[in-house]
Length: 68
Image (cartoon, rainbow, N blue to C red; front, top):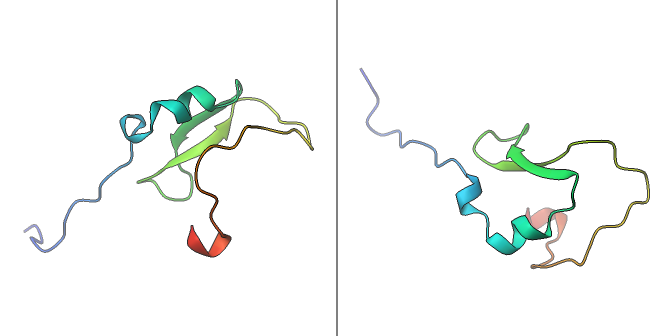
């Protein structure tokens, strides 16, 4: 029997990501399913990123750690 009170979890996909975000990703960064939360997308590097590497410009709303 399936529990009818459980609703399926919504899984975030690339279709949910605004086009400007996808265009703004650095060349060696991709969005794939998160290793922390399988229902969300995570940011993955396709090769090593050197310490101190800067990315930008930032677009969006800055959040405090407690808000994410």
